[in-house]
Length: 190
Image (cartoon, rainbow, N blue to C red; front, side, top):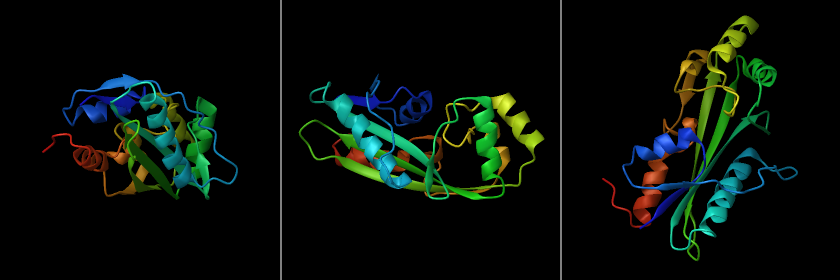
């Protein structure tokens, strides 16, 4: 069975490689604009499905994995910062607070019902001084990361705690759920 990851994220690619299944990578063409009033969890699920569906339409017979992560701050989605000042502002707004990260995964093959799952990871940030935030942002430049940090790197020093049922979800692809969905689709995994 052919497997395709509908993502150009190196983080998701590195995570999926852990399952030791051969897969291809394709860029999904999906509009990631939140719908008016769309909750962060619903946005993550919709985008994971949209990414998988976009690639599945171009890869007949292949199983396609789509995934998306949306950080939730005060009930609203928090996107990728894109630059230094936005990253500093995001981290300052999360200082001393607990933020929910919704990570959705969708596995589908054109013509079949989708298999989907979601993980919610709660990250409790310690109180952060502006100088600490600036040092972190300058050191790791997390401009392509929801929430402006890399938990698999130096970003871990920003937290008091992480609460999750899947430690890989915060990086961008919940492997426990992904492995379950792949087994349901007939892939041979331990």
